[in-house]
Structures are given as structure tokens and as C-alpha cells.
Length: 148
Image (cartoon, rainbow, N blue to C red; front, top):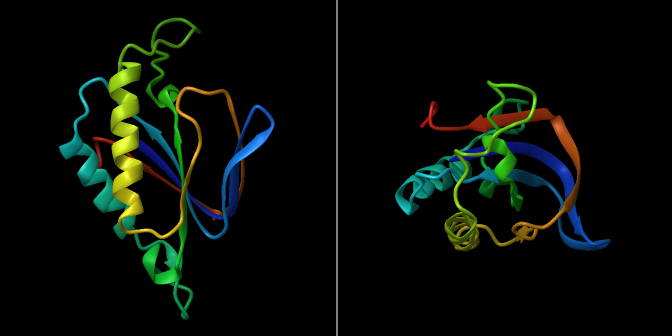
């Protein structure tokens, strides 16, 4: 599993010219599901995501979590996070999860986040999406198996 977490002041996702989701202050999270990922692995990522303290406190220190700032989430599925470019110039995606299993795990992550975060918006699994964001900082964190 891979999460690319960007602290944003605003973000949105559009599918076929229609805004599917948008948020104000919070995290835009690109989610890649790998072929061996499970709900147990997803739970670890969700716990880390929701506990990250990367918003500034009154002293300018990155010490506040998403909940501390009433932050919002925009969760976007992105299998291309599993691109393997070791051979040639055309990426291979053999390590990405199969679509049905990946979608089920993505939906699980969305529903789990909704239990803790009042505003959780999404893109559309498997769709061609246009993602817009105003990265705050910029501040971007990569969570993958090397970190957890």
C-alpha cells in the first residue's frame, strides 16, 4: 500500500467535467493498493494518516493533527503509484492490486476514515480524473511499506 499525503488549503477532483469531490483545509491522499494488501495493512495506514501531526500550532510548529484543525479528506485511488520503471521506458503495473480487490480495499479505507473525519470526499475508482490542489507548504508525506 502507498499513500501520498499532501497538506492542502483546498483540493478537488473532476470526472467527465463534473466536480466529484472537493475539500477545504485538510489532506489530499493518493492511494495505491498493492497486490498483497489487506484490511490489516490498511488499518495501519489509516491510523498513521489520521494521527499525522503536520499542521502548525500557535507557535508555528507542525504539531496538530487533522482532527485538531477540523481538517477534511479527499481520497483518490491511484494505481499508478505502483509503476515499476526499472526496465525500459514503459512502466509496468504488475505490483498493483487487481481492480476488484483494490476497489474493495479503497472503499474500506474511505468508510473507515468517515468514522473519524466529518468531511471525506472521493474521486471515482478507475475513472479518468482531473485533480486540482493548493498544496500548503508545500507539505507532502509518502507512506509506504518502508515506513510502516
